[in-house]
Image (cartoon, rainbow, N blue to C red; front, side):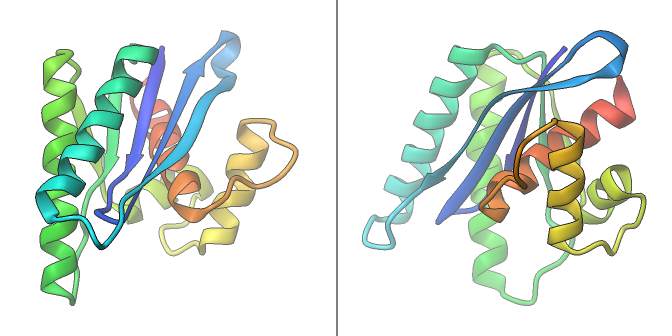
Length: 157
């Protein structure tokens, strides 16, 4: 099964694609970050994110898409921006008839590290081990996207 994970954001959206192989072994297929400029309008930023996600969905044809959802936010603007990014990713997935599953950061950390309050470095270290990487994946948006994909694999496959 091929799974795409997304860590949504308006300035930076991380993505990661993994595949489950024999004996539940996980294989890294692709990872990266979509960045937008604050000089772009909100609509331009969302359109750009949509375009890149659509391209990646077409390129990899994942069986599932997992996205980190919002748990809470003290900053209302950030909450709205991330919600809009989640919306365009969900729209892109719907064009490919790919179901979207959302996980809270707490659920993702619990599924990866076994502790919902794990720090980012612990999550990166575990991702490095699970995907047999030479170094922890960086930046955090990319490692968070891979964590969401692995969470999906751990909880649904």
